[in-house]
Length: 279
Length: 297
Image (cartoon, rainbow over all chains, first blue to last red; front, side, top):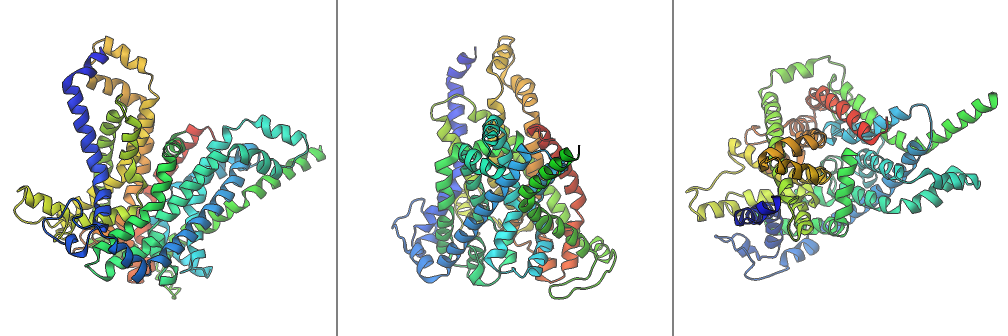
């Protein structure tokens, strides 16, 4: 009966149309960013706009790399994202180990605090965090940004790693414990290798979150030396109205690393995200 | 007996050794700022000026501030509208993407793609498309004869709220689809087959099987997304900056303007603290729910 319904021509036409609408909605803005970045200055502002560049040019990318501070922003973003990822994964692994493998007073409270911190929106925290980073003397520095990014990456990574470590049977580490290994050795030599795929997915999440972050980057850095791609991009846009070609080229570059991550690990990222929220 | 107690104490210390870095982050970078922020909202603090305790003066000023009420209204209307739109569109898209058809995984990956685009980049792309002079949306609308004058996507406050909603929905929709597809894939196909034999149509199967089966997923998705949508600072900041005439602010952008651009940190903090009780409520609810799902109590 269901099969009958599905082979009806009307059902098929509807299916194809609906998929087309969904894909146009999802992909058109990304397409438009890329296409604009490959046009000449004149063609970008031509009316009507061309759906496909008449003359392909990498001119916009040349300007972005050669005549703006974008390479510096790119380097800063890379350093902040890598620093955040390493710190968040290490801190998260240690904490997730304690929560999934050890009994201690206050375990439930710590677990609750992790979830609550993950849910706490940065937009509620930015003014006081600004003051705290100032007190610590790390405002307007890459170190300060890494510290700020730990506020959301650490709870998220810990929460996801709790999920991964719970799927690893405890027999493994108990066997190692009986053989005389201490807890740190068990974690590093037994659990980390077994949970490695999970750790990679969590690291990719942390990197993506840090790479994409904007609000903290805007507020906690004000000198060009500490700007990241996101805060630097907005500086580019506010500075001059007629540089859409460069802004779109810079956007395309900013998308590239996360797009590579997404294409390489899409299945695991989606599974991790949905499982992290509900299971 | 004493030996056992000593051993238990050693385990405790060991556990907290593993937790120390996490606790440092949570206490120094989340809890302390949160408390400090609440305190700041009761002071006349500014950058490089400690200020003094002024009671509820900041909040009293907000109550008389039409811009605050406008921003609160925008925040609520946008959050409810965007989340509702994502819920409906997300359910529809998830039903679509769980139909059997060739290349389904590939199509899904494409539909999730906006999720991988950095939020700021997405909004810059939308701002460029909304451009009233050279933007592609006006060119398409004018070219097809649907409008005879360019639409002021971002400079007319009423239209600008719609533009903000469209850009925000574009960024947030994939998360809904992912969650719902994940939920729908766990529904046993036998349920649908049995209902079909009983003569239930597609709509009634959706209502009596699909929705009840993924109700928990829907609840968590809606709550998570409400928090994120309410705080979608970058969307408003880049598209309109809260203008024209402060008509499109949401609370986070208003807090930024008052607290950091005007350097009245106490006033800015008060804007955020005024809605904190709602968030604490949602966060407590969600935390309980997510811990229960995971079995960590």
